[in-house]
Every structure is written in C-alpha cells, then in structure tokens.
Length: 518
Image 1 (cartoon, helix red, strand yellow):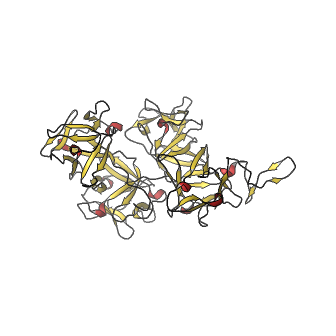
Image 2 (tube, one colour):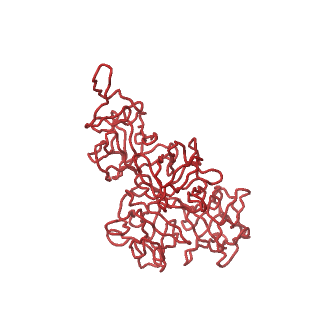
Image 3 (tube, helix red, strand yellow):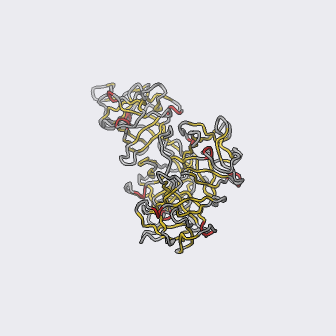
C-alpha cells in the first residue's frame, strides 16, 4: 500500500457504443439495452479483476449483478456472483475503445438499443465501446512504477511526480472529459500538454485517451505516445513508448479533505513545535495542515499530519501526532456549529485550547469552564480568561474554525447527478451527467461559491439556489461522510436536490439528497 494509506479507487465507468449510447442495466427484470444518451446511475459499471488471472474482468451493474454471455451469445445481467459466463477480456483498440470478449466462448459483445449479443467472431464498429469514467473527477494521481504522487510544481511550471504523500492543494488534479478524451487540469486551472508544459487552454495537445492495463490507467496522447514521469523530479510528459509499460501506468486515489484549524486565541493548530498539538502559530504551512479521513461506517475521523502520523489521545487528555496506525485513540468525532466546529476525542471529552495554546481533551461540554482560571473584578462579575493577551468569550475554548484548503475548484455530485447551471434560467440543476466547476472562496468560517461567470450562489426567497448573485452570500460546509459534504445556506437549511432535479436551499434535515461528493 502506498505511503498515503489509500487503496486505488474502484474503476467505475459508462460504456458508449458506436451510436453514442450508453450500456444500461434497467431496474426492472435486469434488462440490458444501449439506448441512454447520457451517463447516470443505471449506466454505471464497476470493473472487478479476477484474483488469479488479472487479465480477466467482471462487469458489475449498479444493481450488483454481473454481465454474462452464454454459448449462444445471449447476454444477461442477472448473475449475483462471479461465474464462468461472466468472465470477459478487454481487447484495447488503437483509438482507445474496447472490445469485450467472452473468455469462455471467444465471441465479442456489441449491438445497439435492445439488440445486444456476444456472438460476433470478429471486431467491427458495432463491437467497440468507449469508456467514460464515472468516478468523481477530482483525485490524486499515483505513479505505479515510482510509487510517488503527482503535484503541481509552480516554480517549474509542470506536474512533478515526486511526492511521498499527496499534500496540499497542488496534489489535486481534475480529469476533464471532452469529446471522448480526457484533460488533466491543475489546481490553478491549467492543462497538461504532452510536452510537459502547462497550458491555459485545452486542445489537441492536452487531450488524452484513457487505456486500461491490469486495472491501471494509461494516458495516450494524440501522437500515440504515453504520459510517464521523466527525470529526477518525475516531470509528467509523453515519452517515446507506443505501448504502456509499468512506467506509463497510474492509479487514481481518493483526495481526502485537508484542513487548517484556528483556535479562539487566533492561532493555528500545529505540530511544528514537536509531537504535542498546540494552537500557537500565526501562519499556514504543511505543519498546520491536517488530512481528515472519515470512516465510512462510524463517520468518525482521523487527523493525519504531512509526515504521515495520526493525532492520538494520550494520558491526561493530551493530543499528540505520534500514531502510525489507526486505533480507538486516533478516532475523533466532529460537531458542526455553524461557522465553528468542536472535536470530541475517544474519551468522550471535547478538545479545548489551554492558556499556553496546548490542546487537551478534557471538557465535558462545549463551554466547560471548570478547568479555567477566572479573574474576578468584583464579587459578582466574572471576566473572561486570558490567553496570550486574547480574551476568550465563554465557551469558545472548545470551538475551532475549520478551513478546507484543497478544493479551490469545487465539483459536486449528488445521488442523481452533478450540479450544473440550468440552461435557461439562473437556477442550478442537481441531476446532470456533466458538471460545472465552481470556485470555493473561504471567508471567516463560511464559504462563497462562484461560477465561471464570476457571479455568486445565493438562496432566494422561494428557497431556490441561484447562481447570478452580484455579491457573495455565506454558506457553511459540513464534512459529514467519507467523500461527501453537506452545505447550509445562511438560513441554516441544507442544500438538496429535489425530485425534479433542481437545487434548493430548504432542507430541514440531513438526508441523502443533501449529501454531495466533492
């Protein structure tokens, strides 16, 4: 496993036939067709490799059933597990499309609309499928050969592949799908050209065909050459190879949220001074940045440092960045308090900031002053405790301001699709197969969301989220689940996708329609 502790993302994609239609698994009767014009839930397939023979793959539908072919070429999608009829081979073509061959019967799968079969003995246009990735398009990129991560090198104007851990906003890459090909977009909105340079506009030199080999991805440029890391810093550019080897293979990994935390004393939480965590720094560096990794089941999270260590609860409520393995003492729960957060350790106590900036998990409630020294100015008047000359309002020593730093470009996908501008109005759709890229701007515990036209999101009096605001409006983000966040408007209500696919700011509770992959 790489140093980041992640497994590669499961490859999920849509398959597009020669007529530009997507292979679809219908809910009723496990029926198959190739009729859909766009990629949505029913058009998503997950690739699973055979554990013994890695060239053999299984294609699982959104219903958890597997594509299969019998000896007569009849294609079904009813099998609930791997069997011999479900075994396929991917035969890549020079244009990046695939032919899918039944391993048992050596026939090719193809067709259109309701007329699908796996009986062709040769590959024609009708047996070719283009791959459209269905993963969230923002991820980290790992070189299989170098075991290093790609990141933007601003000084050199390139993407370098030399990081042990994908740290900071520079490690975030966006895969932009355009006309069947992909562009690699950096966090400063530039595109990687095949010569290794970064361009402000996409074009032929920045477009790549995705190929799959042994479950890994390769990027083929318009000249038939493949991206690979070059030189001591791993400059990402096209090499001389016309066939992908280990040097040309990559994994996509989930990009976890990375945050900085500011305490009530106005200082950033840091491990710069050693293993004990303290809020005592005035600037943001890697030592003040922490990666939140949320458990899928418990929804609790770990905080990881740029050196790869986890926060851990130690004796007497201390919090140190010393753990190398996840355990009960490295798990924390986050409570979202509008523009602030409170963090509770595994001992059931809230983390609070002491006078010297040290973090201790010793408070029973948010606003537990039992351990603080109060200065009495009269028999009846209590004045706030002091810390380095700062005055803490009551209860603020358990509260932190959390800033998400590695999503300057925001792409949001809900249970029914991506958020995108509506074609004919100022509202937003929440069920599109294509996405818009929005700009996320931090502002004192809140965020402003801006479209490509420079206008801002806001919630109107009818509860609709609009995207043509002249002035920014505050939204708050809550990192509720692994890979998913919730957004509240200034009215305190959640943004959700309604049944008609419109984005609204009227959600009263946290439901699946109010959670967004980011």
